[in-house]
Image (spheres, helix red, strand yellow):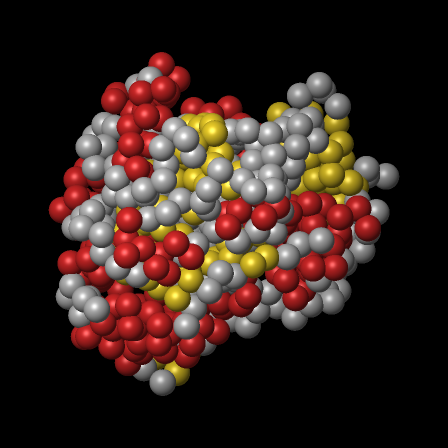
Length: 529
């Protein structure tokens, strides 16, 4: 008799999403996590000072109000909730001006109209199209296995669908510049679009509709990003399953062409009667199962996997007072904004930053986005204190060698903090109690499957998106090995805090095993206008 019905490798948010769904079908599930704690890319710790909580990787949860997860898994009943700030985004510039994006459409358009009435009108049109009218389509595209372009074209027809699909012929800079005229508005939206990738290549425009649809849908998990995996782990436990930490898998056992379990680092074998699913990076998963079980085209693609020109770099601050931005005199709402962009004055500076990342240089133009989470959820900091962070774009092998992140940590920390001080008036030593620079090397140490600090487990470039993530034989979470599934960020629609790979894998397993689900799957994408 097998130890479990199913084994899931990795207790990040995707692995635990798969586990939570399958637990609801009566399956006995084991989730195996190599680290001492669960969470993966949704980890929450206190790196700067005790009591100052920080999300080490994912912090902005996008579009949760439209995702199936909250409803299907009854996450609130298991301890997960979020806040949705009224002032969602802002971009501030050295001249003291700023653009502010509210949940309220008219307030947003009023902010944009201070720079360009035409751009305000364009934003309103795009909002009605992607945030409202086509939102169900975008949700269905996210929460179903990706389809080849010809199949998508068969399912989507009409002028609006043609425009949506047409973005895939362009790069993101071009798409944003086609829609908007004002330099500052272009700069903000180009920066916003590129939070997922610095690679501005032909075809990258395909992500524009989905990212734009969430421009007013950023949410903050109450108590930290870790609250989501903790809720999923409670669902697994409530159904008789188990989540094991400090349990590293070294091999996926395959017998007669079928996945039958795993071998742990200590030599222990655990068996699974029905399936094995892996939420860690795809190259490692394939190696664990045996490269000879996969076509040469698959292994060659994985051998040449592009992890990305930039890696996640985070400056965490423990503060007495939340950041106050110089641009508050222009628009006081910037101090109430959740996600704030700064460091870039125009598109040339954005290009310069991205070019430095590609060349593995510490950027001359330090730009990025960040937040003060404690301003929206007091649990992120001790009473009367605040926790803030900033993500400037930077490469893994900084100045030619990733070891520089350790050797020059103090210098990089100071340079990043000084850049922040160019825009915020109160980040002097009297307000900053502590700093902590979380580097790409730290990410690799914390999560060995985030190779080169790639928190999305692979660059968002056309050859690694949709059915090509990572390869058409694997993108839908099924593999050529019977009973083996991949449910992590390196497949299909993965790469953000959306749970899509975990959700898609759960539905595939339910269908393949003939299980009974108590949720209604998101409908397949369809659009006619």
